[in-house]
Image (cartoon, rainbow, N blue to C red; front, top):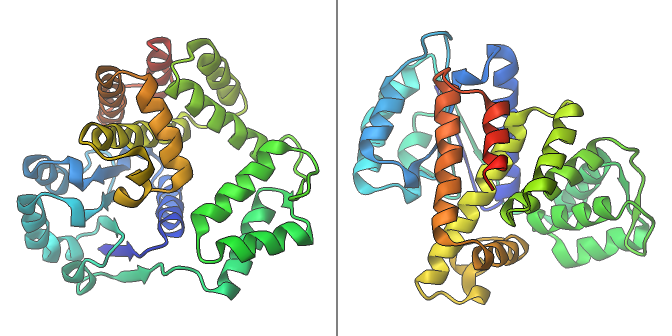
Length: 305
């Protein structure tokens, strides 16, 4: 079975992928039943192994295939060749990209495009996301955000996260959540920042606190891996001569994310960045093979900073 999600609004499409993945974990009863693949980073041999190897312990797998449009030519050719078999499989193959994968769309059980939000949809999106984060925006703050960021879900989320981090009444809005999900999110962001800047004591303290609060280590893992991949990508662009101010446009990256990644890339040697990426990818592989422990693995990675 094939699902295809694509479109310019990458925040909402990625959120949809995460929601489906989380539901699948609950139904399947184990995270080892799911595989997440960044196709631009994979060789044909790696993709062949992933698509043809079933699970020894689970009847159904979820395989998330990201960015086929950025994959190598031979990888793309192999995936297109396998599409009819993937469509008939009992496993779920969830394809994500910013543009439509025409060959997959023709065989997919579900195709959903995530266009940029209209004015009305933006208002509804803002209200729903603010409510889920426990943030009560003032009428003035709501009007300002809608006036400046209609259609841009990433910028809206950034504005809401700023409000959540303030935890106090300001001219932009009021933070109303008790010590709960928003506080946890704040600590996760702080952990990622501490990891990026190699602040080992702070990172370990936050990691221990988050585990004690019942946060699954997998959630922390994916945030750290996403951070490292972003910084590695930005570092590569900087080394190739791309100006820091041009990175958001060249990499199709949010300016706020790009700015933070540039700062980390300037402080952390390239060799250390690659070591971090390798450690996280290896931990993911070993965990899925049943030979690793995510909780202890992340602790070791943070101790190695």
